Image (cartoon, rainbow, N blue to C red; front, side, top):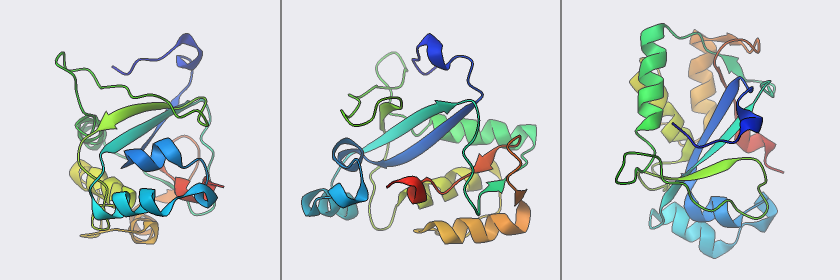
Length: 171
């Protein structure tokens, strides 16, 4: 249901990142983060966005986890992720302009607002919880998610659905 060009049709994996729209639009690297963007994001005053990236091979980091889901859990994870996209009048995800620094990923308007209480990590926790994966009650930072995943998942094998701390990759 996501618009894509033919160059991504052969790719096997899709990575979703939910967060503050202003942060995605204006912050190519952590060093570029402006106080005004951080304030709007942390206060919950901004809109949210979804970054979608297609890849043929996962790029695992140390600490990533391969998570085996049942068909029902996977269906619920997909349904929950889809519900995070803001929709147009025809029910399609609403694309947004791709930041000039970000060739490759697609960006879409998303539901909810990023804040100190609802971070990208807590968004991930909520998606996994809705899928039926045991998660902490709140996960503002990624260690809470990976601690719990360490109890239910194995090391990333590149073939299973996997969870990665993409924040570590932002240089």
